[in-house]
Image (cartoon, rainbow, N blue to C red):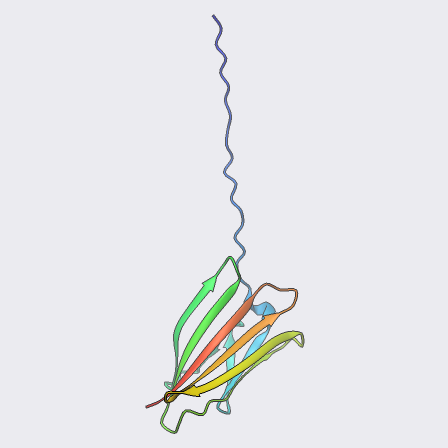
Length: 129
């Protein structure tokens, strides 16, 4: 009687999940209602401690390399809202759409760059307090 023993090994293959690198979009500044702000890590608005702008929420997807970032802006003077975003790269696409309804203004800013998968959608909502 003979016995055969077959040993196999399984190697755990970990597929690398890409981490978003939003610096490739080159976002370096925001202008909100005429006030200039810098960007932190090419993604977040550096409010400089102002109490009239607050980060409300943020979601990031590693699979799509996309982030949604939402800010609330509090104002005593009205809901007119002007937002611009600047990049250090000339081939970055930045679209801005602003709507005013129901006593608040909403500005959606989409930032992307051809040949890169990273993208960001900013949502700024301005309320009168």
